[in-house]
Image 1 (cartoon, rainbow, N blue to C red):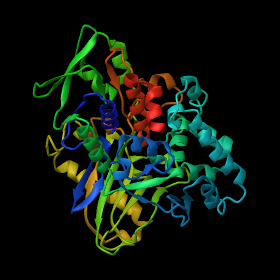
Image 2: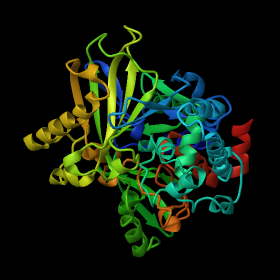
Image 3: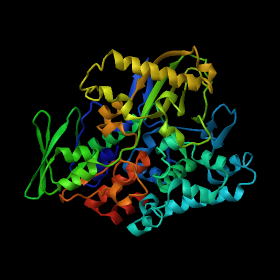
Image 4: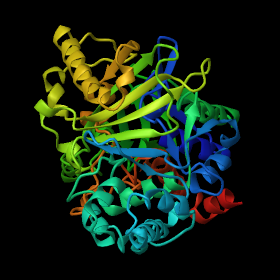
Length: 489
């Protein structure tokens, strides 16, 4: 999405743009697929910050796609519901700042001050990220809050362990890792969903579709099934991008939206030092995931206007370090309501963590639309086994699922790796480590003056995160103050 939005912005500002896309379908993590005539999102199951007045709302409005999107809201009294073990209680994470507090107070009557302070602190963090408030600012503003570690900061807000874990309950949205994850990741994600949460219908690929339309409407060109394998630099500037079939695309500026590690593998230039390539290659990636998509028998499973996040233990961050024999120790359930039978779900998607090591046996295979390869019988059996293990845990919370699944499809870290060209199928790219802020933050500028980076690895992941990064990248070409003025009008 970062590349499409960058192209749409620059085309809107009068530049001639060309998008080179490896896959048949545009959009990276915005891709959707069909199973038994039902549309499924591959990654983006709901989006925060699209409500009136929020940052993403303004960016999408400026990009010309906001009014074209069909958006469905959630239950404002509990967009996400957090569950632990066999406890029947589900704790609501609601929409709206005051409502967020009011919905949790019955469960934590002595924590009103803590909840108020929590809202205050996540807003405070947002204020320290100028672009998230669509204003120009200084990098020192962010530096004041980027060294806050997630669990320590929450402990300073509340010493109630259960409340702390409820607030961490939807950490699948940012792959929360105790001792490493910065508080700002949690804060920026949480604030956007507290402001507003929407599902894009019939799927998140609509965002990519409408961005592509805007690019073409402004005279831009898009080439799909066009895999770039070489970036050629001569005399200190990038001259062309060469594709797998030998085509060369010349340009004045180049923006790489792929993972920096992948982009640097393509680059033939002495301007990028080997030590830099080695450092980026050695960066830790966020964990990967296992996604199970289910098509349901009609009128059997009641639709929920919320998402479910379940944790096996009261420690909401423990699931990312699951033991293979206990898989899974956490999961999220996302519902899609039936158009034919309102009030019932037509499909659900279940997301959990999965370590890349679990699929290392098949790491030398490659299977996606443009390159079909059968990973073999053992791989199919592995997916079937993991699907059943996951379903057994989900049945404990949703017993009505049992016997009411028409068909199902599973995606592993290899699926995400092959479709998004992300090392190890990392859920959110490079892991942001509060202990190594300088090492894990990659700039939009490179040592080659006409090559820039954008995407989830550069600033922050998620639809909002990559949209902000696209602004940062485009501002290198059109100017930050100018761009922000256009968006804020």
